[in-house]
Structures are given as structure tokens and as C-alpha cells.
Figure (cartoon, rainbow, N blue to C red):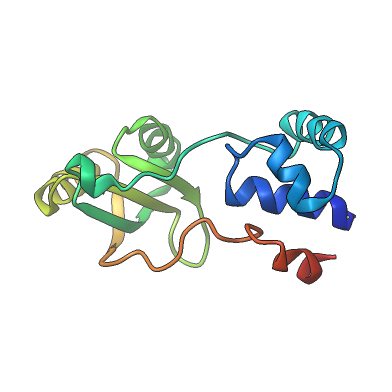
Length: 154
């Protein structure tokens, strides 16, 4: 189980991974050397990837969609490989309850989503799909990003 000190470090990383260790030390009252060592250990086990959250609309990608896909059995592996390699997809998940994959796609326009889906239907044995267009982002990547979560999880 993770202790309170570890949760404080994790919540500070989730909130702002670019803050200095000195600033994190002041906020958490944990020595810089301890924070440094913990983060180094997390990078080989807990931390999957360092990244930035981007406002894609400022780059001209004005359409985001969550797409549920069901494919016939003989196409699932080929579809899986295609989805993982597709540059328009931000996230690809294997799911259950009637669908095989859940995708988060980033596109310039709705017609690009339609072209993407048409390609899947024509080449990968899609038997069912459902598209949810993201209208507004209300909360994103917030879990464990605040010291208040420390008491929730410990």
C-alpha cells in the first residue's frame, strides 16, 4: 500500500510534473533527496509516460469523438493493430459489454471522423459502432492531482 508521503509526491506530479523538486519539497515538507529518489523509482514502475495536456482546438483539431467499435471475430487482431498505429487516435482501449474497442479520436472536422469510420467499416469487419462527439471538456486528468486526494486514498 502507498503511504501518505508517496501520495503527496504523486499528487504533486499529477498536478504539475514540471515543478521543481525544491518547490515540491516546500509544499510537501518532504526532503528534496527523498522526492528525487522516489520519482526515479516511480519512473521504472509507476510512471508510464511524461506528457502535456494540449488544447487541440488551438492547433486546428476542432472535433473530438469517443467511438465504440464492435468487429467480427476474424478481423479483431487486424483492427487492433490498425487502431494502435492510427495517428488520429489519442487513446485506444479494449473493452467489454457488447463492444470490442473504445477510441478517443482527434480530428480537424466531422467529415474526417466520417471518413475514418467509413474506412473501418470497409476494411475491418465492423458490425456495430457508436459515436459520441465531445462538446465540452469539463474535467480531464484530475484524479490524484491534489493533496486532498491523499486522505481519500490512504
